[in-house]
Amino acid sequence: MTAVKQSLRDSKAARWTALGIISITMFAGYLLTDIMSPLKPMLEEQFKWTSTEYGVFTSAYGWLNVFFLMLIFGGIILDKMGVRFTGLLASGVMVLGASIKYYAISTTFAPGAEILGLRTQVALASAGFAIFGVGVEIAGITVSKIIVKWFKGHEMALAMGMQMAVARLGTMIAMAAPVPIATYFKDSISAPIAFTLVLLVIGFIAFFVYTFMDKKLDASVASNNVEPEDPFKFSDIGLIVKNKGFWLIAFLCVLFYSSVFPFLKYAADLMVNKYGVTQEMAGYIPSLLPLGTLFLTPLFGGIYDNKGKGATIMIIGSVLLIIIHGIFSLPVFNYWLVAVVLVLLLGVALSLVPSAMWPSVAKIIPEKQLGTAYSLIFWIQNWGLMGVPLLIGIVLDKTNPGVSAAKAAGETAVYDYTVPMLIFTVFGILAVAVAFMLKAEDKKKGYGLELPNIEK
Image 1 (cartoon, rainbow, N blue to C red):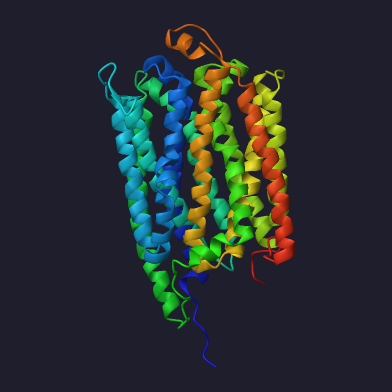
Image 2: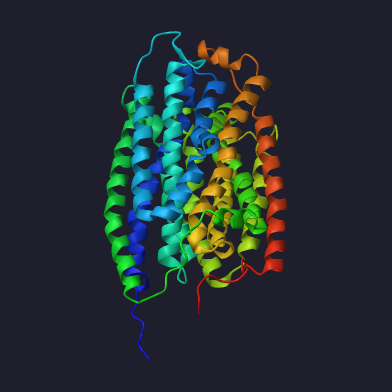
């Protein structure tokens, strides 16, 4: 009997090195995604943006992904062309979108100039963010498939947790660093964006380096004479959308992330208006959220790898959302230490659910369809990432008439965030219901969501 040679993925050093390289790209992507969040008050003061205009800008992240199906096309390209081509393409698109966004924020436009009914600056910044959104989302599904490729049968949930932890580090810096950077450069809002643009270029170069490792992995797998899976076919899309487990994961994803990332877009502003902290300090409190995920996401991923209980982990994380946003919505406990505790708890939730959710997709969907499946889930998620920030911006203006105008005029005025926080609470309630349905479906279909990932 011929012994089977080990592939490159069986080398612990090789697979973790590959993960480290691709995590650089996602770190830079997450950094730019939230780099404008703490700058909302400065946008209102310097550029006279309203909350609705800020909501339009933040919602632009999903425009091309949702309405032009770019994310779904990206998933199909991923399954047809592979991770090397798709990853380089996505990284390049991220750099392009960030460059347009930087141009919009760093340029002075003629007063009253508009594009499609939006002020020119808002329109161009939104267009750049929309293009960037295509790149970072496709990069996300590419990285997810890369992790499955390298870690299936090994520490898959831990690897996904570690990658998410590095990405969340980007979110943490995006919350804490922009205002100090902008202040250092004489209140230049464009300075933090320029800094992040440089990191995105470094991320592009890092992914280019990864492609050489990926080629070696494919060569080592081929040398074992392993029969490849049937290639992806467009008819596989039909198989994916007929899978109830896929839809439950997708709905949980959009509800959970709609309670977290749109919240982060307004979190610094919430700290100023509800808790009375200074603008300079406002970004530091939300920056604590990703801090917990740096350690807890890998921890919970390791528990899933070794002990299982993936569906249960998702239920616990969703329940936390209800508690956190419910307390945020109360017109009491307006002391900043309460906000710190709630943000830290939200970090626990953000560690629990993704650490179990993303590895679970690989148990429900065959590997050859994973790129398309992840892209469809991300596409559904983008409806929330696009619509919820816009909804919150509109609700803030509608429930706080005159506040935007007062702030633009330099007057002291505060937003009441009660209704937006109640909206986030409702998302949490729905997420819990879907998580319980997913656990029931797993028991019925035997996906193995409650079983360990590591094959022993």
